[in-house]
Length: 257
Image 1 (cartoon, rainbow, N blue to C red):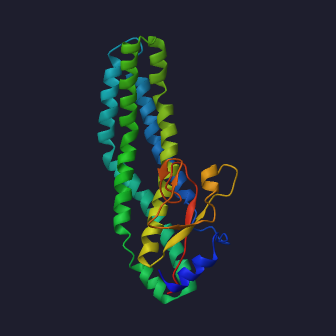
Image 2 (cartoon, one colour; image 1 turned 30 degrees about the vertical axis):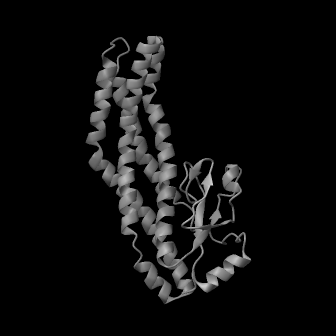
Image 3 (cartoon, rainbow, N blue to C red; image 1 turned 180 degrees about the vertical axis):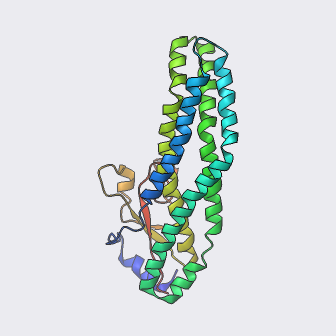
């Protein structure tokens, strides 16, 4: 840790909020990513409506096969959609880092330009492809589990059928969670990669600052967090922006290069 950073951390227990909020999650990328994921959810709904017949007990098994095949079919599309999101978030993160570097000098700009973000982007892309494919796979598993429940627990066929027909809505809800969580998590990971590369010891935890912030995250507002010591909140460990539905973000503490 640089000496100036250490002195700063000794005197600031709760860093003041930045006058700008450029480190916040990329809302445009989130909305765009959500639209793409909802296309998958709608198609899952379409497959369910056309492929499932409550009067035909065998149609549930056929629907399950259709959904699993759909997951394989969309893999190339998932790669393109995932890369589009990761690239947009990365470009936004880079712009903000360059804005900061202009204020602090050429040396910092040169260091930021050479940051090893490639690995973080490849990891994020692989995770997005897996998550996108999980939408029809989870829908297929849900159909399987519901069918099994009807057989083993004697649940009324009409109740099982109604739940199967909700597959599209369930997938849409899952798509919302993925879009909100993954865009924020990708942004935090890229910020961390660049920050650690230039010698940043950690960051100040920032929240969205509204009534929807969960209590455990509100308690973290303004706290310094070391990159190598992510906190555990509500039974989960991670940095700001990496939790499900988290709208918090890290504001890096920068060395004075």
